[in-house]
Length: 199
Image 1 (cartoon, rainbow, N blue to C red):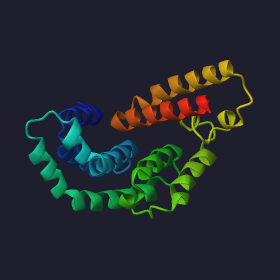
Image 2 (image 1 turned 135 degrees about the vertical axis):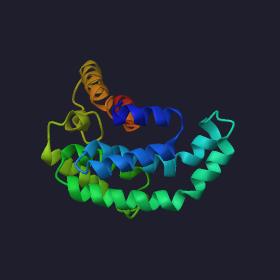
Image 3 (image 1 turned 30 degrees about the vertical axis):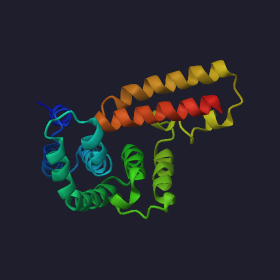
């Protein structure tokens, strides 16, 4: 079974700590596996930011209280791992447009966890800007607030809707390979494009 399939199964079973263990193992054994770093950064960030909410409101497990306490006890460990792996991955993949795109979105959750001053939006904005420079035709950069076509908005609603639907279809195919992070980013993109349509 491919590691992405293993990861998906672990996340569905709410085994987030084993998912982190698996991803750490992958990046240690295959240090050039960029997707593993991206998935690891997301899994750590999501566990830190969304974990308490998950155990309080989402999980149906009858062990959710002890699981919440367990993950709370791992907070500082996961925070340290996130800072470490964020720095390592950024030094390895600082010239990769896809990595910069995903890392900027992961860091934007809670920049301080990634070792970025929470008021320093220039870091994540700079990562997106560099991603654009490295690959200006990246379809993931379309359909958001930085999309020149959308921001100019001289189009009629039908042209705008057609463009947004094409962008979302293309993004769904790409993000569909990125697990829980892809699901999150696609929902975010749908929300942003809906706001743009109603402005």
